[in-house]
Structures are given as structure tokens and as C-alpha cells.
Image (cartoon, rainbow, N blue to C red; front, side, top):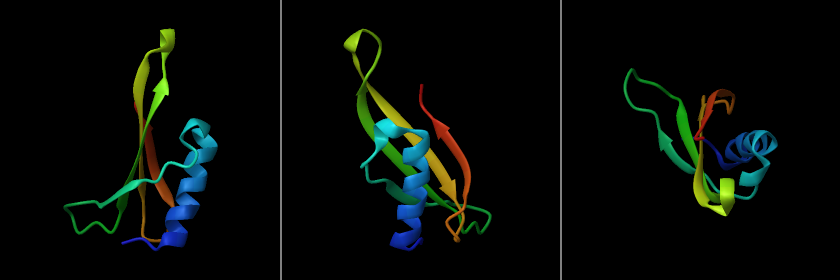
Length: 76
């Protein structure tokens, strides 16, 4: 499991790429299978979409045990 200072570092990178998620605390789950030491961080927030409609913004970040982000994906 990642240390909190590494989680903060990863979060800062996510906030830079997705400023509308700033301040959102991630849900943290270890990656399963293949003896992976990676961790999945999921950031979720309701934001205003087209026409003022509320939509869920979900950003998933996969990081290794050193806090380096390997992959980021986002919902539309």
C-alpha cells in the first residue's frame, strides 16, 4: 500500500491534469493478479456537463510502489 505522502504526490499530478478534481480524495485499491505492486487511485466528482447537466467525472490513475504514475484514464 502506498504511503500518504506518495498519494499526495500522485494527487498533485492528477489535479494539474484535471483541475476540476482539485481537493477530491481518491479511493485506493491495490491492483490484483500477476503479483502486481501497483495501486489504483480513483478520483470521482460530479461536474457540470453540456447544458448544465450534472455528470460524473471519473479519473483512474495506476501508480507503482514508488508513486510513479504508469497510466491515467478519464471518463468522458
